[in-house]
Image 1 (cartoon, one colour):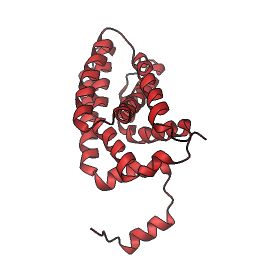
Image 2 (tube, one colour):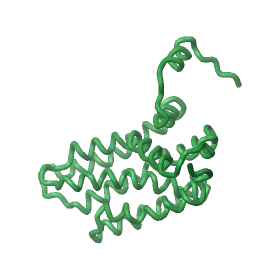
Image 3 (spheres, rainbow, N blue to C red):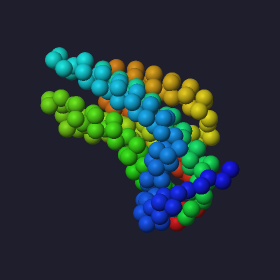
Length: 208
């Protein structure tokens, strides 16, 4: 079905340059705004509820880590939508003469834009006594978790149901590890092999 675009929108599309890393966020805002809004509302709600619990009491960093793991796992719907965009809406991306480093950088910057609301909430609500490195851990974990699930989908060519089952078990394992004292940075290290493997096997068609 042919979609008619107004003259004003066509004018803006010709005059305004949209960076490559913003293509997917713009696609989400235009085509799947409810999915984006509900996922962000739920993940931010979990974080706000966690921080509100400790307004006067001493922080339990393990409980905060569990809340962050749970909140970030909600973004799997956005991750799968990115995979759909990457393979169906713009399949030429896979065969562009882009090195593996640039591909990872593209996904990294895109995930930064998509996870910015959660990262801002965490940074603004972290207690004063929190070490500076903890905020960096949260940012690295949020982005690493996003990239981990994205590359797992690419590696397995998984649908949303299979991704949901996999993310459920991964979230449970991560929660147990956090409860036993593993820092968020340690979780990021465990995700790196999947990202590297997916890059080597499936994404790098031509390495320039």
